[in-house]
Length: 321
Ligand code: GLU
Image 1: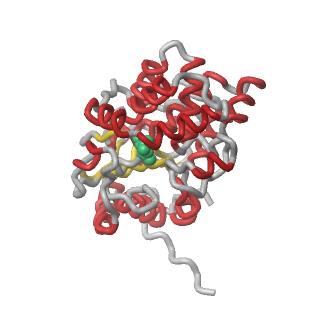
Image 2: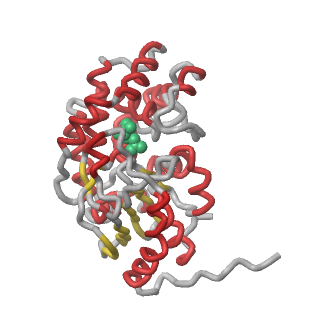
């Protein structure tokens, strides 16, 4: 059997130069993808945009491309909504158990907004990283949190280190056109898996999807998950080590829709993607990563973003496997 190729770089490599090489190698993959336009404002994203950032535990930023261009985080907000729910329900027996009776922890093998599985599985979403699962998490937040809007925005601002904004155009457009999400919420309510009014759950969900970050901020924001739950910038504990591992595990197995197996195979790191073309990832104990390029593969993941994370992980041997 042929030996595996040696990594072409080491941790001591000039990371900025390496990221430029990765950009050159990965960017053409964008031509295979299409910018999401089912939310009209997303259709206006520039298909040529590209950014890749790596932020170390000491805050050192390495990056290339449109690092400071904001985009709506979309599905990546599901990581932070789950983090908030985990903070609130913690590991405390019955409340946590109730959360995990309402949403599973298995990959879906179906598109992120699929209704089919929900009908077959009696309104219990496969995991919190697909839309139905995120709607259940939001339903939990509406019960557990006095002001879940402020709490979510506050958590994100805390780990980013500065206040985050909301893209009001995306928020409005998504609220107007979120027919499938409304269908998912109604279907789950028919199975008694949503407690609040559908409008209230959808409004919170659309709000979290419209929160805006840049690639630089996103790579910074995920570092607490690479650092046993502690934000390395401030030393603040966001999650216990156990819960932090669990969120990262759910990202690895469920964070990239029904391409999670392929991401584990070709990147080998916990990842979460969003339909605006961003993907965040983390290297345990080392760094937060984020890639952004709007054109998506049919699975809903950024084509060039995935190629970039693959290249980087290969060249630096970052896979956790
Ligand atoms: N707001 C998007 C939706 O609900 C999120 C999906 C995503 O980013 O994957 O369709």
